[in-house]
Length: 162
Image (cartoon, rainbow, N blue to C red; front, side, top):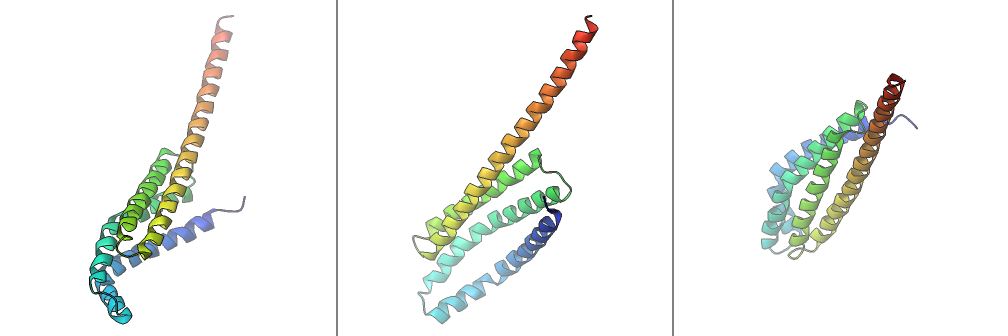
């Protein structure tokens, strides 16, 4: 397998950039929305709808980015099969699910939100699958370790009985 640490570091840099962009965009978002509505000659109530959908998604996006950062930091130091990574994957899945639900509900007022909502739901599904795979692999590794310790104990017990 090729060295994965470059990919992890590169993705980590992208996550940090996304965190900065999320904060900056959240501050400037009302101005961008007003500009969009005026340029496109849309209904002025659309700006309110977009902001009502966007701002509740910010905490989920922030939690997602923090969990992803923590997961990548664990991978960078070589901790792949751990409970913390499973927890971080679960957080990413829940965050994608919640943001997806918010956007799909917003899609009834402004259809393009459906695209983002379904994309977020797909991200939730992928994260949930990876979380389940990591969980099963960690369980199997622990089970094998338990069996090897138990076998070693039984062998030492058989030697002592002779």
